[in-house]
Image (cartoon, rainbow, N blue to C red; front, side):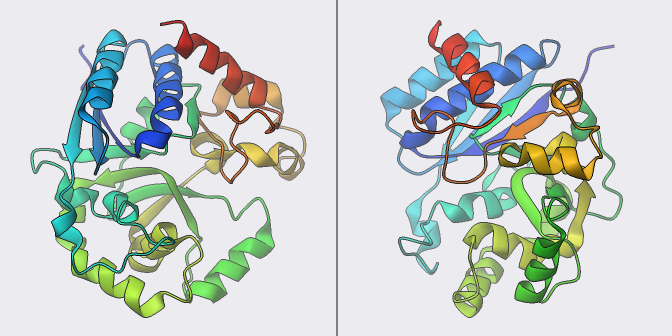
Length: 274
């Protein structure tokens, strides 16, 4: 039986083209039986770069559809160096993507995909609109800090991996709610788009296991300790799907190093061989 295609969403600027290509290389290697359609929301990636990305995706049997977002759509949005226009694209994906799409899986470009994405794609959301993982379980005190900071009872979700039921999301997501939240909560926001998502839609989000679906590559020792030794390297390689290089120390930088840096550089090498 033929599997349905998986629609993936990415949003980035020209600076993240190479990390996206590495992510896509890992996706293709780890999911050889899947058909992917990649949707790229952007504002100013040059046409020559877009054409190169289309060809790169085609080489991996994937379709890339770039959607240039008009900056006039954000004339009333609060913007600054901390709150660039691009931060809204992921939040407003339900209204920016074609109405024909029923669901989409958003991925940050600083991710390696090392196992099958299909189980998450086929996750039943029930009454939830989104599915995401929380990293607060690694350090319990972070959970309490974020609950107090945002005044919410649910865990704080990392939006680097986000499954969206677009049909349901279109009923609750609109630009003015998001812009208004930023205006009203500006001094409260630390990770602006992620904070806004948690404030507005956290209660509509199904929690999934971060060790599988959004593993924070900075905290191998914490995962190992919390799991009483279960989540060792062998476990990660067999079970983790999205290895997420959160934070400022990115693995493509020469001075950055963590336990998974060598794996990332291996995929860089594979990407550059095309």
